[in-house]
Amino acid sequence: MRRRSIYGVGLCTLTLLAGCGLPVPHVPVPVRPHGGRTFYLSPDGDDGDDGRAPQTAWRTLRRADAVRLQPGDRLLLKGGTRFPGTLSIGPGDAGNARKPVVIGSYGKGRAMIAAAGTRGIGVYNTSGIVIRDLIVAGNAASYRSQDGIGFVTDLPGKRTLPYLRVKGVDVSGFRNGIRLHGGGKGSGFRDVVIDACAVHGNKDAGLVSDGPVFDAHAPGYAHERVTVSGVVAFRNDGDPEAAGHNTGSGIVLGSVRQGVVEGSDAHDNGASSSPQAVEGPEGIWTYDSTRIVLQRNVAHDNHSGSRVDGGGFDLGNNVSHSLMQYNLSYGNDGAGFLAFSAVPNKAHTDNAIRYNIGRDNARKLPDYGGIVVVGSRIGNLAIYQNTVLTRANGSVRAPALRLRTHLAAVSVRNNLFVTDGSPVVAAQGAFGTSEVVMQGNDYHSPEGPGLQWGERRYSDLAAWRKETGQEMQGARATGTGADPCLAEVRHRADGPDPRGSGPARGVP
Image 1 (cartoon, rainbow, N blue to C red):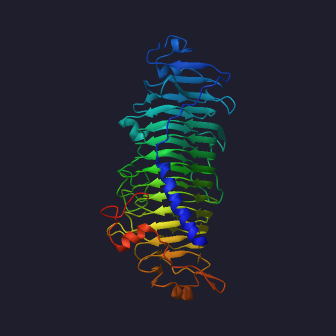
Image 2 (cartoon, rainbow, N blue to C red; image 1 turned 45 degrees about the vertical axis):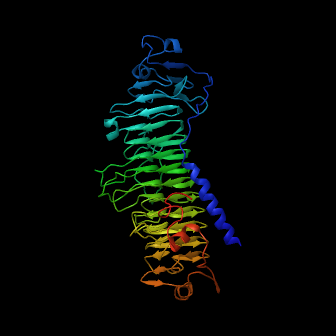
Image 3 (spheres, rainbow, N blue to C red; image 1 turned 120 degrees about the vertical axis):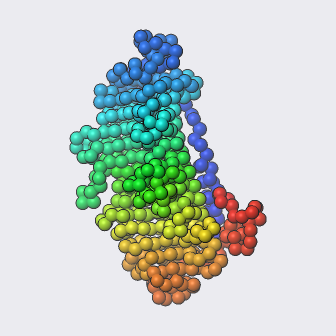
């Protein structure tokens, strides 16, 4: 009964989470007096005026750049109008958490900053900044090399600058939509919230943070307490000429200590990433970070131009003490949920993948699967209470769970793994229980459980238990191959989907 009730919750959650893919509506943030000056910009303004009222507004971003902004100041652009150029906020401009500098719109709608070969908004070696209710758009030159909204620090040492807020902003047409860039010695930003934004049509990534090269012997992180919520990242296509690094991801947290990505949607990214790339894009992922939570997000129809990656979610290199939970992943080229390490250290540790739902992932790349664990010395990884359904896409057939070599202390418990054909599980190594322990899972396909374990393939659980010690709890046998009665699998096994010419690719 308990197993059956879990299936019901999983399928209901699958349906409910589909709604997270809707675009985030624009909700204007009220402007409240907070002790500073207010400057106005309008295309009908005059740079010779004082800029202190809508009737005496300035006309250009260049004039606004000439003002040194102080705590509590506001720079407001007339909504529904377009301003060519760029805004630069430097060390001489600063607010704080109580009295931030606010950059936004006034009147009806959002103002547009139209950049030509430059950043849209650049914030350099300062903080206490709120950017809200704007459209930031780049041209072809900006797409090649600039960030739409770039927060950059290269301060000496490990100094972190506090308080950044970005809300209700649409960013497109840049190399990266929104970027947090830390210094080479570990300087960065802390207390960062990016909320209700759309990042789309950018080249390398929709939203990204990065920092110095990771040192496993002395871990350091450029950014602290980063929250990403309600962000829609789509059609960030990637760079077809960039073979040496990944491009085309939706949301990426790199070099972060304590971060959250929640309630966000990453879809249709990575389609133009390089066919020769050795690292590919992902929908939502993190690397070189610790204490990250990826939760209640949707990642679907993400792609890779090469034979690697292109998945939904990823805990990447050097990630520790992090959670991937309550997410929905479907229709991606690569893995639905990936734990990956390509570096020979023990920094990928103490992570969990739990309470997620995956359907029809690895649509292009059969070397992946629904949940995939790949890499060097991944340890203390817990995978539990996930519902994973994978079905063949023509000749492409991927398992619900794929395990590669060099794993240690990986536990896989109480998951539902379902495919429309064998194998359900593909393990590259014949793992002993000190490396991987499997307990309480349901392995189902119409052809039987289909367990690839090293060089052996098992067609029934009993033989696998006896020879490997898996699916045992002491002397008690665990696990099952019972049919969970998922309608989609029955349609594939019994004949064409009665709702159309074939199985539905989207969310039920």
